Length: 323
Ligand SMILES: O=C(O)CCC(=O)C(=O)O
Ligand SMILES: [Fe+2]
Image (cartoon, rainbow, N blue to C red; front, side, top):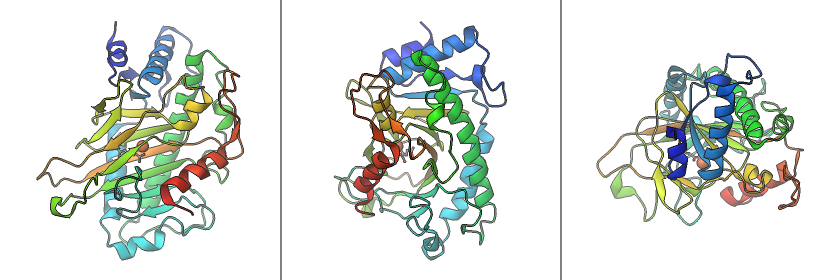
């Protein structure tokens, strides 16, 4: 039994080598023993835990560190300078823009999350981006968005292969990532230093939730704090592992696969008392194209078909209230 196997069996998150299908390699992974292993390990991770660390994806740690460093410059600007770029102020894209501290409660039973975020949802040329003091913000985020998009498509293909279904079934529903008709979002998250005397009862950095779309790619800074609920009902920690990408199943994918792949609840806790470090992460939320109808891939009809944009809209309303 290899390490990935043991990981999934014990309800912990396995580390899987993606080299056979890494970015920069052939567009179609060469069928072979390595790809076969990759398919099996991915299936096991997504059916048993819902999360997997991928190593050797082609996205290097240096790139991730750079995107976080540039993002941090933005987050450290005074609130007045960030406010003009708020989420909700872009007419072409409701989800694009800055989300202020405590604005969201991903678990609505808790006070607002102790985090800030900047969502890159629109890649349109004609929208305004923050530039004063952060002249490289736009180009850095847009470049990283496209890198994540390419990796996501590869992961989606391996996922279909791992289920033994048409390898393009998920790809066909993700043709327009980066265009107006698709809501996929690169979210740069910033968790400021926590001042324990100001923390409200039950407040944490990011409340318990599952993601909404198809899959999420997550890169975390080194401080840790992320926890994932495993199938035994126990929160396990999901530390940052340098050079890897943490990939998880989101709710629409669980529904699409009739609950074969599981979308696990996760959260980010406060740091231990006295730890005043910031935390950062980059989450690439992959969503199918707005107009795609999601119908269970095994034709079981366990869930009725739903239009992607309608499903996501209802989930966003739950998080933000009416918008
Ligand atoms: O910051 C993190 O590590 C996780 C954030 C998260 O789960 C989310 O924004 O959906
Ligand atoms: Fe999440």
